[in-house]
Image (tube, rainbow, N blue to C red; front, side, top):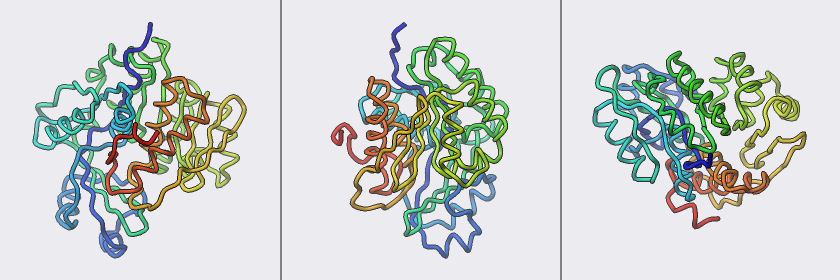
Length: 324
C-alpha cells in the first residue's frame, strides 16, 4: 500500500522556553551544561523564575523534526500528549500552524503540559532542563495505528523512553510500522539517555530499527568507547542506515558496509545549537522519503541544521524549501 504520510513522529509534546544566559548562570544554578536534565515541578518553577525573558513556543525534539519536515514540503504528523491547559493549547496551535497533523486528544487529568527550560550560552551551547509532565504518559491508546501504518517512516524519540507506559507506546508504534512494511527510525536523543537505556536500546537497534540518528557523543556512549570509528563500525553491523552527526565536521552515514562522509553546510554564524540534530533528521528523512541517495540525504540534513543554528529557537525562521 502506498504511504499517504512521509513521516509520523512519536515523542514528547513540550513547550520550549529559550533564553540567552551567561556562563555564570549555569554555574550558579548547578546546571549540567550541554545536556538534558529531567526536573520536577518545583525545580521547573524556581528555574523558570530565575531565567531572563526569552522565547516560548511549542517544542520537543521529535516535534521539531516534524516541523522541519513540513517546512521542507513533507507530509508529516505527530503523536504526543498534552493536558487540556494553556500550554497544551499553545503546543497544539503552534504545531498545527507549521503544517504538521496533530489529532491526539488532550488529557483531562494528571500532570500539566510539559515544558523545557533551555539556557543558551555565548558559545551557542544549549543546556536543557525538562519537566516532562503529562507528555511522558503517552500510552498505547494514544497511538493511532492507522496513522502509523500510513507513514513511510515512523520516527521515535529516545527522550520518551524513561516511562514504562511511553516505552510501551513506542514499541507498539514500531510494531505497527514494521507490520505495514514501513521504515522504523529512532533518535538516541542524548548521551545521558543512552547511559540509562543502553542494554534495551542495543536490543531494540538490533531487532526493531531500520534508521538510526545519533551524534558523536551518543553513538560513542552506546558502545562505551571514545573512538568514533569503532562505534560507527559496530552500529553498521546492527542497523540498515545510521546517520551520525559530528557538529562542524559534518556527518557520516553508515550503510551497506560503507561509510559516507558529508561535510557540514556553510554557516555564517552559529547562534544557538538547539534543534540542530532535530532538523538534520528532518532534512535527511525528507530526502529519503523522496527517493534521494544517502549522500543527498545527509547534505539536506546539514542544510536544515545549518539554518536552525543560525538563530535562537528550534524551528525554522524561513521556509526550508527556499534553501534546497
